[in-house]
Figure 1 (tube, rainbow, N blue to C red):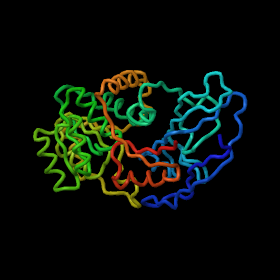
Figure 2: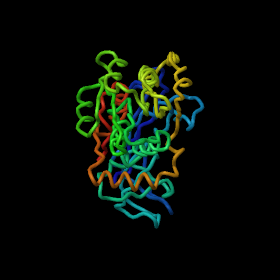
Figure 3: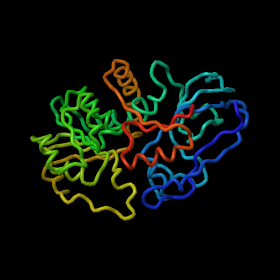
Figure 4: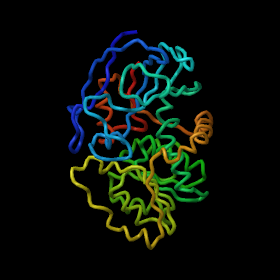
Length: 332
């Protein structure tokens, strides 16, 4: 194996929408693994919207990315050489050690993965996006058969998974996405009603799709979608606040929803969360989601960029809506 590998570093902090110039590709030397260390060659890298928040230099639930260091992000790779008795050459592992082609690490931050599913699934439906969808939908949404569920950002990795879990739980699902192609795919996996938020009046279209209102709102977008959800919510609705990608790149704070008083009158529960809040559900998630994947009850889409040099392009695609499903970078 080559003694060098490339990695993606944050060169400068974006102001507003990120640009390619905010990133740099750097070639680094790979040392030989020492006692208790392993050498891993990554095959897949995860590209996730939450990474945008870590590009700001401000307090948050996780530290900001450091300038001049590899961006931290999920990856799946293969052990090439191991001096750790818990790992052997050929083992498939997951890590969060950064956007790197290869790296040397102790075994502690690595998770050994089972076979039987495509390896990149561990960055999507069987990884953080899947766990985000599964845990929050059950713990905050508390779904009941017959509930009407409205999902924004439904064409992405988390939203599309929520839609399918909701159908498994015998809910009626209304999904919003920004292209007819995404909506056609969502219909193909059982979504009941779809809304293209780029066409027509969003409130009117959601009211038409859910004429009796909604019981659960899974929010990936914020902004106008949140305002619409408040408008059509039934009494005692549950709002799962997962992300607000519509405002991630705002230079100035966007105005909040104008109809927040509905939270009081409709007795709406609105809760934000971080996936690690529900770590106690991890084993339940792995067991049930893995079975659903094997049974074909959970499907997914992927948008793939090839080569680590295209990782910044993949990241920027998240904010133009150009990805369908999980955004990935393939390194092999």
